[in-house]
Each structure stands twice: as structure tokens, then as C-alpha cells.
Image (tube, rainbow, N blue to C red; front, side, top):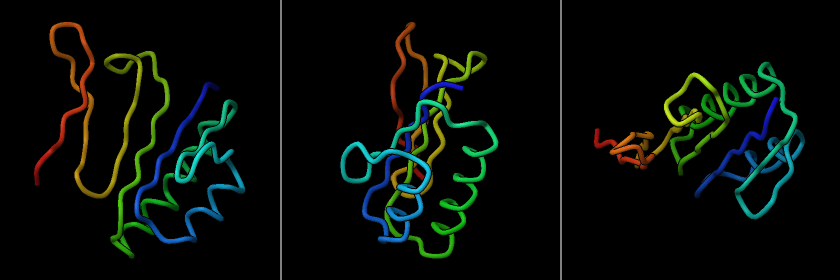
Length: 99
């Protein structure tokens, strides 16, 4: 278990209450947990991504380490603009994905 971060932007207040119950809110819309289990992380992502599918406002990005992933990070996001991590000449960059 390593540091997990979740960032919200322009979402309803329900996210803040839910996320604050499981993670530390470092700044408005920025949540972190140094010891979040895989199961807890997956459950949190399931809830917030389901809410986003229903409500459709703002964006949510989840970042956590994974040794097998390119650059050692997994980035999941919903909302616009969707982003993905890409490697370019050995450097990790964030790429906006247009629908």
C-alpha cells in the first residue's frame, strides 16, 4: 500500500463528504491516503465514477503507484478533458484525450 491521491474539480458537495470519510483533504478537492488498501481504492473509485456517470459535472482523477505501469503510476479519470500518461523520450507527460 502506497500513497493514493484523488483530485476533484467542479463536482457536487457529496463527493467532499464521502471522500473526507476515507481520505485526508489536503486542499480543496485534493485527497490523499498513504495506506489505502486496493479494495478500498477500488470501492472509492466505483462510487465516485458512478456518481459522475449520473451527475456528469466536473472531473475526477485518481493516481496511485503500480510497478508494472509505464512510469510506475496508474492514472484513472472521468470528466473532461480526459487525460492519460504517455512516455516520450523517457519522460512522462500528461496527454489530453479528445473524444
